[in-house]
Image (cartoon, rainbow, N blue to C red; front, side, top):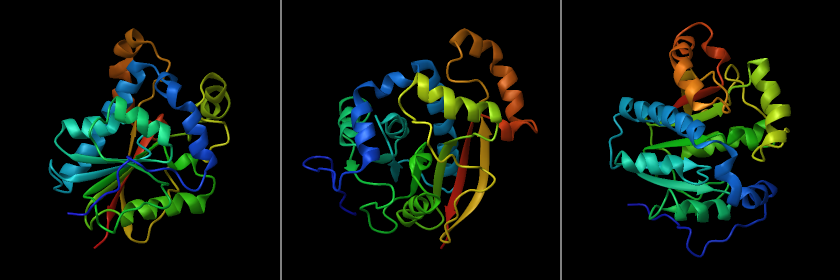
Length: 253
């Protein structure tokens, strides 16, 4: 069993402006999306993650890494499914919020996605939800992917869940509108293009899933009415123009 560093007694070093931003945001982070919108995307991304784990024969009880875990919503859902998730975030205050709410009793580690403090193959799977677009350069994004891959055993999955800005309407919303309405993004993010994803020599990209078309501000009653239309779009040729995508990598032997 590989020993993991815990949040207790850990301080962030060195200082990182991205961590400072999310430290400041931590008290209000949960309020940046409505509970209904968050529940929808967490459910969909968890479903995709669980399918990837099942396909790789990674069963409950396995240790799963969540990089950029924030308040711990995905840690909570993975733990409920019987997995042993470990959360990593650059922001100490985000992890403290996770400990108080959705990740009670789970291992939490302060670290950068580009320098994970784990030995190779420590996990049976990993996910990063809306993290890579916060990294400033493409080499940083590649470095983060390679760190995720390094931390996962061969033949096991690494999931990169990201916002899809291929659709010009979504790109306009995320670059110009969302930063004015909310505080998560600054409008300077380096969005990933699902057609030109980061490459890790130690892994192969197996598939990309596209999902959700309704924006985060959609009222619950409207979402329920339009959910069948959204599901049909996800199965159509229009899928690549969705609001979110998930890229599934497999670590090579």
